[in-house]
Length: 234
Image 1: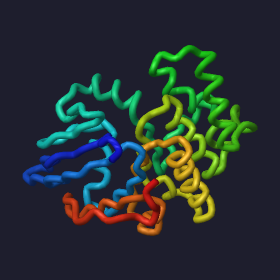
Image 2 (image 1 turned 60 degrees about the vertical axis):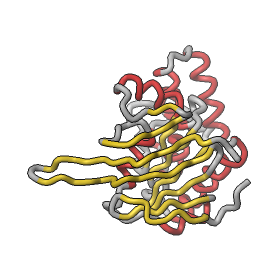
Image 3 (image 1 turned 90 degrees about the horizontal axis):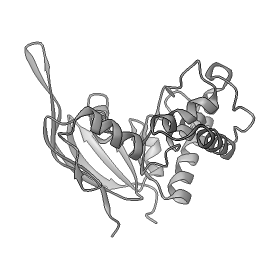
Image 4 (image 1 turned 180 degrees about the vertical axis):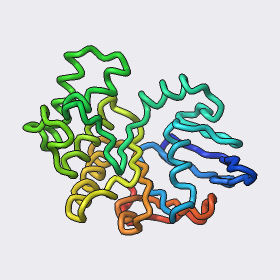
């Protein structure tokens, strides 16, 4: 059995909205093993984004425990969360979230800058990653000079810059046409299969679950069911 990398135990997230109390997550519990490809699905309002923020060390739960590498991160300070996030999590977003004034190379190198890597290493690794994903001739292009698919591949390269344990992909095909979206999913599969990365795909698109080994269904802030995905476990 592979090591448990992420574990949520009875996680609640509650927001005060005026006079109302909103429970975005209600007692969520599950485990994700190292090297797994897991999809988290559910309709709008199911708690997917809240859960993604907690797994990604962007937020902490109101109640419950969140373990990452056996460390409970539920009550850490923002500075400690930021440190863990920078080393452990690689993010891929629907909107790409590239910095428009930076080139593709500079966007990919940015996470390494935050971790204190020297300039020569940042540039060399960023170029290597971009070349690997077919963007060796786009290193000095800015986001507005790239197609949607190219922008997402830059974002994937950036997510891998610090060699994270977990790739957290939030609706990574949401802004892409079906053909380009399929190419992005094949890239995520390659990262999972060839590099052994743990991939957590957060999506409302049920057509994508066949790429995952397990599927966690959320509804009304709770785990409705956990079922096998279309991808066989390695």
